[in-house]
Image 1 (cartoon, rainbow, N blue to C red):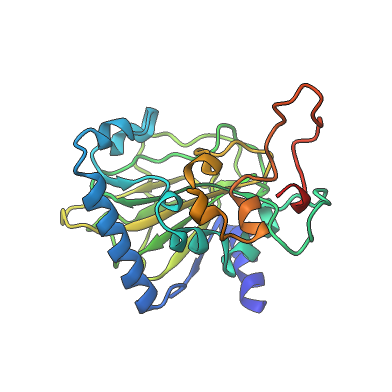
Image 2: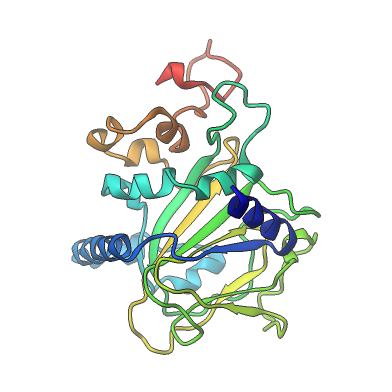
Length: 270
């Protein structure tokens, strides 16, 4: 708990924290093998990258190696994203203290996206929220899990500490001199506020360096993927109640004319 508390304070102060060796070598190897196999399979469809290409500023990385919605393919990825001590850190920022329908010690926030990316292109400085507010409070947090050693030669993250508390957007055309490079070893996980000004380096080595990209949001925010439709029944049926909640099962707006006006629910509906 001391380490968790320290990580929370680092995020409050600087906008990010790094969990060293969050995955051991065995799990990193397994994760990387699964991602490689998935990419090899989906890349047989030559239109995949065009169909899955992000829009707007993120279209800059349209030619990168990307696998969207990992939770669709394997329960391993659901477990990786919806269990673990990193959720305790995220919960401090994203849990709704007034949710009231599940145990307050459990996450009541949701998984918004889980992708794999081997970056080749540099992303300019940006944030991943649609508006900015002063202070460290946020409704969106991100994680980047390194499956290879990352540094400035192969596309590591760049960020400007403490910019998660400002009330203005970064200039995507400016190359900030005060930015720092976040070098990670295999298995390291960085957690950061989606309001933090961040970018990526270009991959000069042109070698695959896979990362797992995670986005979590407060339950009342819109996810980037509809995981309730994307996760197969054979995977979903083997999840615990809190995992189902994190995939959005307890925060669905009613589609019935006489349904409840409250979009949040407890486990009793599962």
